[in-house]
Structure formats: structure tokens, C-alpha cells
Length: 206
Image (cartoon, rainbow, N blue to C red; front, side):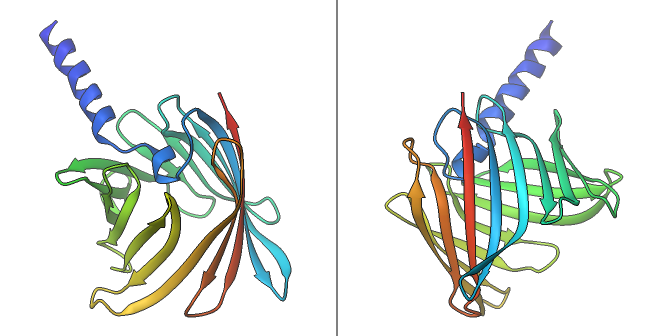
């Protein structure tokens, strides 16, 4: 009986500690599923890069996702398991990603193949409201992404290398919202490369 009690406590602690994906994505409470389409914009012409379908749990965490390219070819699928998230790809081994809660509003997210060979790792730093403050890559690029907000909306992402040199700075503007406040159309423009992307978002609620 005591073992069951401790197991339940552990699950509750993990549930409370890890941050909600809906908060990270600045989505309202009650989001059930969503589709995200990302376009590159050149000379006012839009070209679809990828489409992502997302299903959320009732507490705002991603249950599973499916991402395809402009031709409908699978790029990635994710599935939330009890202790990890399984990422499946068409051309390589699955990744098994574990999230470990750390002090000072941080999470360490590490992904492995065969559950033992590390492929990537990042430290997510959060603001008190559950939004992302910065993401520090500890394994592949070693870049750090800094997230800035204006009026509770994501307004800029700055990317720097491990020597604090600027890699990119992306200005973000939400130009359309639904009645719950979710951003339905977002424009992202790089100040470094001048690349422009348009993100369309279609949420469904409980």
C-alpha cells in the first residue's frame, strides 16, 4: 500500500513540476487539438514548409503530434508515454526524450536512441507564468534562444552562440486572434537574413 502511495505522489509531483505545453505555446485553457501550418514568404508568395497536427491532454500537455512536409510526407511523430516522449522519424531510429525538473524554473530535456545513446539535450528556463524564458542547447549547436514578450505575446526571439555572439534575431507579430486570445496568424521576420515566415494556427477547444 505504501509503495502505491509513493508511486502516486511521484506521478503528482512530476505532473505539477513539468510545464504545460499549452503555456509554452501561449494557448488558452481548454485547447483540445490544433493544426499549425508554416509558410515561407518570398516576394509576397507563400510556400508551405510543413504542417503539424497536435493533440493535447486535458491538463494542457501534448499527447501526440504528427508533422508532414508540403507533399504530405511524414517528418516526425511524437507520442507521450508515462516516463518519456517517443519521437518517430521516417529515416532514422526513434528518439526517447526524458524531461527532468530542475530548480529555479528549469527543465532538462534529453533525447536518446535505444534509450541509452544521447542525441541531444537542452535546458529550458521558464518564466513564473509558464512561458519560455530561454532554451540552452547543451549538445548539438550549443546555441541559446532568448524569448521576449510584449503584452503577454511573443514578440522576439534572439539566438546567440556559446560565445554570446549574435546568430539571429527574429521579430514576431501576431496579426489575427480568435475569441479566446489564441494567435491564429503570426508573422516572423529575421533581422539578420530578412527571411519571412507566416504561421497559421487552427485550434479546437473542449
